[in-house]
Length: 569
Ligand code: DHE
Image (cartoon, rainbow, N blue to C red):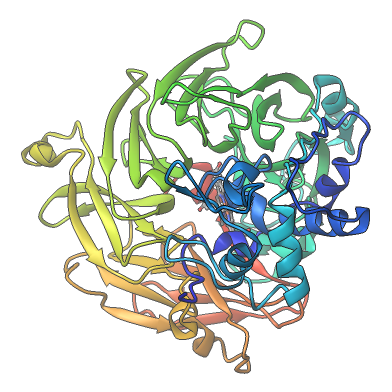
């Protein structure tokens, strides 16, 4: 069996909240009896296995083990039959030995190897654990959501104008993944202005329409609201929106500036609508229901959420069902939702250049779904190479095919360019290409994020999940006038000047400065390793600055205030 840790490798690094594992013990958890032939585990073994499962496996396979990016892991599939046979109806049944090997060494199908992070005993334990019936965690009601709400600085006590002298437009909110913090880094001086405690294994930051508030969501479902106008920007409100979460956005339609926020939860599968400046919860909506294939799904997790600027609507992407919801926030009491069928396993995505179409990866279906938010309809479902992973994607004008949106791939060695429509008459000759894959640029597998900027001539792509150390530590840069091959492959780890380590320092998430002249790349090492952000001059591709403050532990996503506020990518 081949060792493979590139495809969907983010999941092996995923750390779901330990607290969530604990929740499975609560009295109202709907424990189900294990099937007759399931291996038995002591109470201590079960606890340990649950914790490992939530930290390492649930992101791909789901809490209920129904499968998404990763395979279904329910016992009917994993358990040897009571009579010892391994075959049923043509489906391979996996026993202890085979499961241990798969978990240790991964598979060609994309399962990553865990032999370097789990001990032999832990591998055996996990093989046993997934042959037992999954536990069902508790639900989380509106009342519980409300009970978790904390206003740290009431609106009346907040400044009425910006009290610091920072150039807020060029501030970066940087995820410090393993410490559960964000660093607010001044893009002009490269100094850390504030380190703010947020949720566990914090995931993304998004901006309010005005650019004043930063919303940070942790994997433990803790949403933190940071006020950038304070003399020292700090958290002014908090809300626990669920037990396990990844997404947040704000109301960006004219007249709704900073009015509402929405956050999506993986468990329980639901989203929460809140007041934008206090996080007071207003409504919790379940996403359980039918998949696009017409099967009921008990765990349809909320993946990416984005806010329209042309309607008072959020685009809410439901992973397991493949349903894209357009949630109209103009009347929250009488909430109207348009449900658009696309393809299963929706994950991340971004706007096209016109901000009329939202393009989202149905990653395990190897498709991109494009939604026309003006008409409230699916515009196209586009087949792509394996496991598209756009982040928010990147928009530029291709020399031959006109306006395109780009996605990278976790599972393929290309960057895919898809032609997008434009109302601009100067692009009318490109209409024939719309919604077609017009080019696949040669890259390497294990790509997570691509980026460019309207003022740039360059296109950047990382490859942090590539198993080759040198590739995972590098990024590729194309000249957009000649996309036949990367103009340069930059080894960011070498450029950082940090000492060479055996552990990979993954170069991840290129992000532009507000004026589009600099590109910031995180070097994501181990929790005890020195990490860095390397800042490049976008024109010359030379290093401009290496930010190596010891407080900056495991930096990953970086969100420039202006670019995030205006969805510039
Ligand atoms: Fe992410 C975006 C889910 C692992 C860094 N990630 C997203 C989004 C989702 C998601 C649904 C889109 C949010 C939105 O736009 O509203 N991520 C998941 C997972 O389920 C997964 C695969 C496993 C897990 O258990 O969490 C996962 N993600 C990771 C990582 O390991 C990364 C690389 C490092 C980290 O900090 O955790 C990571 N994800 C990011 C980043 C974005 C993101 C930086 C935002 C990209 C952007 O430019 O907007």
